[in-house]
Image 1 (spheres, each protein chain N blue to C red):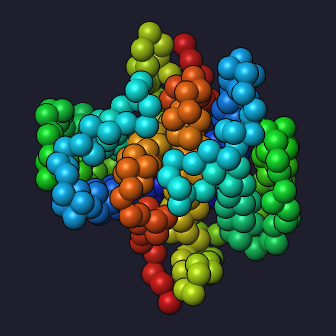
Image 2 (image 1 turned 90 degrees about the vertical axis):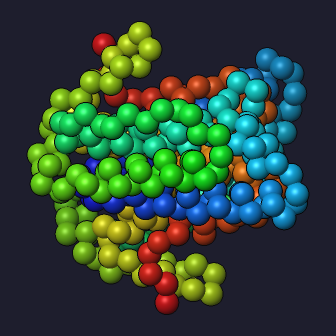
Image 3 (image 1 turned 180 degrees about the vertical axis):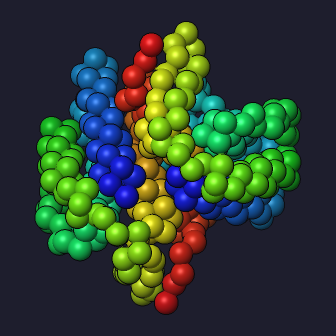
Length: 167
Length: 167
């Protein structure tokens, strides 16, 4: 459970931070306000880049906390720069890495309830991680990547999948 | 390992199939050739919808096969319709569900080598699933969703995260 939550999320959030760095650098080299990227969306009724990053962090910290039976720290949604988003990601990684594997032992069978609008979703811990938390975090990290790629930032799947040793 | 590969991938590929159904229906109601959606991309140097679906299937079947020490079935990349892509997804789900949990026992520590261009990536099974296979499958499923959303298909995160009981 720890490997598939804390390790997986820290890895993908670390990659997201490096992807954002490339977005920020790209705005500099093309000489436009980086805030344009932060406000970019793939559709008028989809969330912009800033919200994709905030939600990826919130789902990661919220799901690890739920599995460990803790209350996660709350972050204000007040980031207005790439620098502040990087700090939020770093704080999220610090928090989830503070949860030891022992705190997640047995969490496969923990009852988890997730408010979702007027509904409440009910899961056992394993199913929650598999069907909700992992796809949800990766959805927002991928969409952040897709927003930047759509706007001409030079990225490749290697940025998204970084990690693993090469030979 | 089985829960985080076979179960997770069948679930997300099943959701992808339903998402494609909504894309196809949307083309019908807006009276344009559904092939336009299949050829749509988020950037000129990104892959179109058809390839996103093919690769999501290939990574899912290839990674489960590698973890089980099997050779996966090969699919020709010749789909030209939503119907054919749905059939590929169904064949992928059938294949990965044919791998019993016992075939993946101990696969956490299996040595896995992945050719990646001129490099070879080396992983232990657990790290392979966590850092390569899961993010890779979800990357392509999310990008397929994002391509359809970008083109005005009515989808919500509920389509992406379907599954889990509600109350």
